[in-house]
Image 1: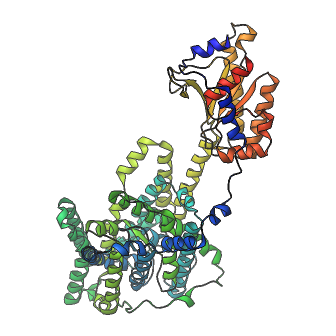
Image 2 (image 1 turned 180 degrees about the vertical axis):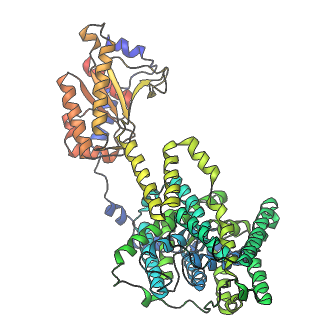
Image 3 (image 1 turned 90 degrees about the vertical axis):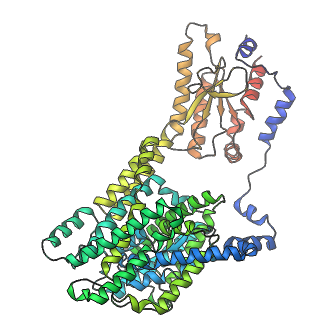
Length: 634
């Protein structure tokens, strides 16, 4: 009768020989222990290990061997175009970070050079960015006021950059890139959008020529300050000047998008704005009529700042925490930008190497008066459009910025602050991705909740609150998915030996007197083990209740076949739940069978003596498990 039921289940293939099944089962039972990480590290010969490490640390040695003159020509044009955008943006982002303007230029010299040696992306443009600048200013000014103690504040920024670089390099060296993924894509979209609005509102200080401005970053405090200032003291000349050049930059960007051959126009528009507005202020003496200017910018080579790192400060714990936040946000932005353009060019970006490169460039940058730098989306897009071939464009850009530091800083004395504000404002629309938010809403509502949480957290709270809300929601989503019963019942697809989910494929045929189920989760752990055990026992009761019209011998389930092919790991709670399941099944006369456990899972089950408890009933496929078990019963 059992054999007739098996024949009716849709199987057309003949059962494999009994000896073959036994041999394949022995393959699982006699497999060696999985190798340790130290064993994998020692498996390579020492010279090969050293060579692979050097190539991993300095990818420039790989692409330099095939570098040609025509490639340098393209990189030269891309680097010069990039520098024309980088110089005014770097000055503006330094003021956003509450630093002197030259620190933005310093951060566009050393970090790009280090990244060109160690980075794997051909298109990523390195330098200061708006979001990281906002993070530093919003969190560090709570420790030291940059207005009253600018030197102490600058030391904190450099120390934070050092810690950020240490964390970033550690993530890559120890292959901890998954930590960056705790800030999900949806959370980053929301965070960037909220940060863009906050940055834009803060630029109203420069655009309106307001002297006293709030140090808070939430939208309520900023709007309240702007409202009060508009009724007291602001500069109409500054506002008109800033809005005029903001309109010019936006129009240039619109033209560049419409005509791809004019990609260089939006790239040089900020530099043109700086040059023209500086001449206008100098010729009209507008600085004497309320138009605030940059004033002195210290030029020359990056000064060494080793002695400026503060490790004896009572704020060291806070600085390390801020460094970790900056490290994660900067890495997330840089890797996301790099992968986007690597996908377009058709090559693979190594995330761990990117982390090491960005970490080392920030560590060395903190020793040479640079604050936290990372990959910029707007400048990377310009670099890509300008036809860059390799990271040589970063070297050209860095050399150009260095020349500007040596020769051109005195010419920026009359550059109006409003122009820097307009340059920052013009770069913000690229941070607000409404289409992506709509796309996330359509695909995953929980991801959209993380997006909204990060957005409103930054907007109405602070940068830290926005990040905290995003991480909490992301963790809650992981926990929710983990604790949900990750298990499904399987049936045979008619005419095949394929077993599939009976809910997804209603035409699948269940095997009589057998409950076949598969663990859907990658981890059987404390969070979901109990619920999976309860679900299996409930299915057994439901199966027997559905067949209550049959005699006791006919309706009784003989086997529970547990497919572990999706399971990557199991903890002690998961093993305990399996033992309890086995004991409960034995009490009601049902045997437990395991199918296709992964190497590490099987090793843990074997160490816990669970394999011997179930009589060694471990098989490679569901078909072999059914044939072997029914053969034993017959």
